[in-house]
Image 1 (cartoon, rainbow, N blue to C red):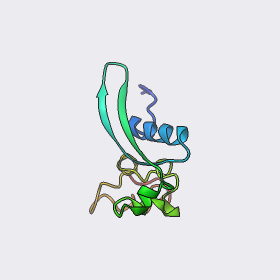
Image 2 (cartoon, one colour; image 1 turned 90 degrees about the horizontal axis):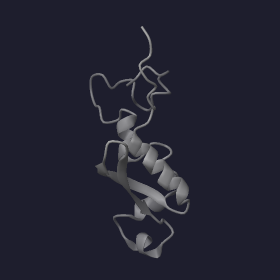
Image 3 (cartoon, one colour; image 1 turned 30 degrees about the horizontal axis):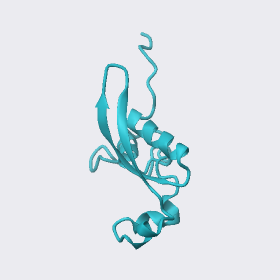
Length: 110
């Protein structure tokens, strides 16, 4: 018995969101989606929002992102890809140790 390969703990989509967030510190990551792939790489389009822009403040659909609790969403796993990687798409039986976080349940979840 041995180890076949070392796999990352995060999906490539989540890593792409975090990299885009680091490159543009004045923006917040809203979400991302798959664009394409070849045999070597995968491409994701990351949607970034400037929370300080007046157009965002006046838009009722996006004004929620201006709140202080949404700072660094991609780094904390609050985007759709982050929630999927943390196991938060599951509900009911088998998901008891996923909420509020895997770490708070002593890594017994997922």
